[in-house]
Image 1 (tube, rainbow, N blue to C red):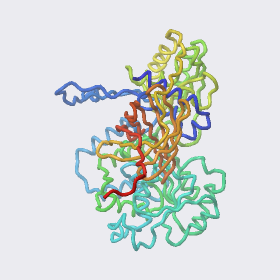
Image 2: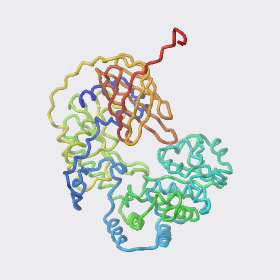
Image 3: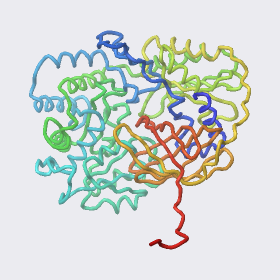
Image 4: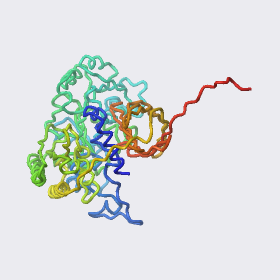
Length: 552
């Protein structure tokens, strides 16, 4: 099944241009479930959790070497030893939480130069609390109504189109109405009396263009509207670059480059609004109660900021670069393998990286296959770039490769990673004989009624398919949105993919893989970060009109 589905997936991809691949969400970079890593090994029956170096293995979970960066899905970052010690010390005592956060706010102001600061249960929680603060101003009578904002004096948030992203759901969770603005004129017109806040996603996307950041700040200041910046993955700068530039509030993740608790973040900025944001968070009741922060995480996050001010960031970057050079030197000894060490750019995910490339036909292996081997064998290694190449990034012909991100690796892992990649790429493999393409087992053209079985529910959806030879195109009518779909059929193996892009700042990707059996298809649905579901589709039979009139 694995090899046949790989074949039909490859046939599907071969029919797409580079432009189509990018437009459809980077299908090759985000391989379907059958090309991704295997599930965790089952724990022995009756096994109990063991505290120690094999704590994850004791319950059947495979730990990994992180060459992918600070993605939450692989655990973010490793807490600094000082952070772990601070959390352990904090766990030994009780404390009045409001008093604790008052003192932490004071200390964060001293450390960062901001007017005030607070610790939240992650950057997303900080964004939600900041939005609530701008909507309610700390008024508890308004606060307890969130997210029902009927009758509120301010219930709108303006987001420039370049800043829409999946994380703005934290802002939307407060119940505000989102107004998008594409240029300076739209933006200024949108900043009416009901606007509570402007939300910006930090990054280079709006340094130029019709609504650059400086215009966002200056117009908001003229209208007296606060601006919240989401800088979750960025390095913390002192003095703060965003507050200096004109932002009112800025949020950071604690579990990324700062290496604090994974479930913590900070909000910095104007004192009255940060204090109002604290009012909207746990232990106080209301919308923010669901985002409870423990005293241990609060102290751990403060310690992470203390350590951030002491860490030698230049020395760390030099060490990470040396790891990339060590791996590059190891694998470049293989004839035909090329390497390029990437220096960090910008503040977000600020880490050196390494690109490794080769001719897939010469070495008889693709980047995607290398990534799969590393993920499914020991020691388990996950790569940067979302999965490790296989022709990504516009490489021509048979060029393929993998990508590594340095800064969440640990000392000594560069040798392990270099040796593992060297062993895989230098291994001899039999010549691959091109398999003749399989003809389709049937014509899928028409309407198919699809039943999707989720973990705790189901959905009835529709595929409208047109088939030409092995290629499939059409539409996927989902629960709310209809989007284009495309795919391939080889024999009875079917792959169909659809993407819902940037709706409400989020994107969904569906990849149906399965078998055709007459007028029925069935298999597994890969939903990316939302994991897998089962699906069955039946060819729709249209009722024939009554030719003989009513009877009786």
